[in-house]
Image (tube, rainbow, N blue to C red; front, side, top):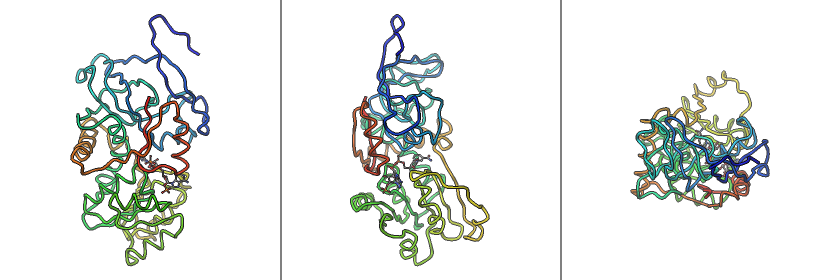
Length: 332
Ligand SMILES: NC(=O)c1ccc[n+]([C@@H]2O[C@H](COP(=O)([O-])OP(=O)(O)OC[C@H]3O[C@@H](n4cnc5c(N)ncnc54)[C@H](OP(=O)(O)O)[C@@H]3O)[C@@H](O)[C@H]2O)c1
């Protein structure tokens, strides 16, 4: 327990001191941090839960311990460091891919803070940034989907999945989704998926072959990893692209690249959001498109559940237990 320095104010945060299951999440008090040059302090109103939080908790992605979990939030600017001239106290902002969001306040580089339009509430803003920008870059930049092409989207009723289906449909693609339950299948259909396969019950490779007259799909967006990777490759038509953007079922083992030639001169990429919001103009371009679509009702967010921050462990159990659909938000 830190002893307060004179005048120091404290905040609640969820931290981990060791990697492990949801039980390692620890509700703590810590000093409210001060912004340095080109940084701002955000008073957080809503925190986005993401699968990366699970990888960081388990140690699949390692950060130096101890640390405050969380990579996405929305709120208001509460203090501004020297040089962060474009921001003022009270500005409504959101951000992604910066550590320390499971807290009442977070320090964020000023360039990563995106203005939130009046029409978008804080929960929606927190639900948009990480999964929304991921769905956007996958469909526009990793593999630019074209009208008439077919995409296979795994975990189609998840946070990224529901947004990716809608964006792929806006681009004129045909979407085949995979999900584990009937309820999730309904949600994927409502989001616009043309066909949905229950990959928990049937062989998704055989189903994709049937649905495409054995031609295969142009692109597979695969965030499931270990249990889907091999069959995902087999779902592709010659010169198709596998975008492996996650591993909710576990990491993909080492792979012989020579197989890509015999399987049809295939492409495999392992993209991650940080490289697709590489500077302020790219970040603003993606986030603003998403906020405009949401404000216009063209892109629907599904906020499945909201938990008090102190119950983050329960939210983790549900996300890794495949019990959530769309977005889960934590409220400090
Ligand atoms: N590379 C990037 O830039 C980037 C950015 C954001 C997210 N991601 C990745 O995208 C994926 C989705 O993230 P999300 O936050 O939107 O989560 P999510 O899709 O809402 O939840 C994960 C889903 O994965 C499916 N799944 C399949 N096998 C699973 C298993 N063994 N254990 C747990 N889940 C399993 C489940 O759907 P079913 O029950 O329908 O199978 C589950 O609901 C994650 O892999 C994440 O790492 C990557």
